[in-house]
Length: 149
Image (cartoon, rainbow, N blue to C red; front, top):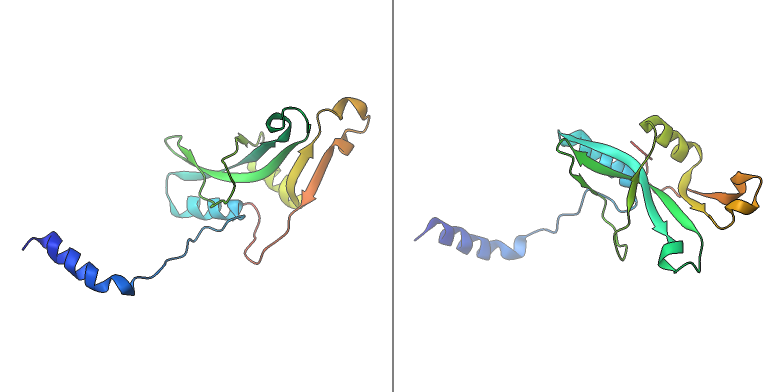
């Protein structure tokens, strides 16, 4: 009898005792997830940036708002990039690196309790006070939320 056949029989006998193992990465906690991944996976680093929700493009220009959500992904030493945070989004969205140091990103997100920046390019030409165009939406914390790492 082959070794694989013995293993298969034993696994079959034990199949009802298997456990569903939960994911350690939590939806909506990208900064924490990426920080943990980078810490425990040598050759990986967290990259801070912005997920782009371009409503202007997807609506064919009917809606001029573009939203930028703070997001953190992983980059390997080899340059491969991937997202460790589970998502129930209907599709994947583009990611833009944050232009600036890590500390600047953290200050922007944490200092402003920022979960999204909404920008209306159609209104940009009409305001003398540009701050009126950018509407930050505060972060709603969960029990596990630690913010960007």
